[in-house]
Image (cartoon, rainbow, N blue to C red):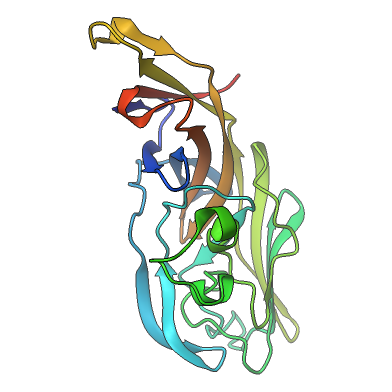
Length: 264
């Protein structure tokens, strides 16, 4: 099965199939470079398929801290915005310990950190909620996508001082992004940039019999892909779009091509 991505730069994509979920997941990723207050398409980045973790104790518990999470969530019901590579314990420009931090997208506060005695993430300022806190008793061998998938795939950290005031999926179009920290008398802007997240569609082409050649692949109705995850790491930003195809309508064995396009 082939996937065609837009020719406007920065794109990569993959599909995921899971019979227990009953759908084919479609993921598109665009990489951006930030310079002079603007995020512009950069060299494509592969979609991350395995977690990177660090051993660390946070919130009074000893468990691995996720440095970078796999980007292969099958679906998302809520949006995540992440700021990586600078933990809550880094000093600000005045040399002081930060007391709070904020991440805003299109004027809405998407993430908030307020220091508490046991609130810290030494790895990422706005990183990942441990999976055991997303789904109590999480066991990958018995996990049910239907029952708990939406909770597991909501990755933004929101315990012990971290909150997500706005959790809706990301908006398409242009948006201003800003990350700031606060301490006694000091506010630092860690990053501020304008980014454009275009609307996307994915059109499936399915073989329905006859000679298995592109001329016999049948075009189905386009699927809308929705941006749901933004990851900021230094001067690089990535955005993920996601959608799903029902296996009952598009059998995995017959899917031949996904054509991803920026919608008008």
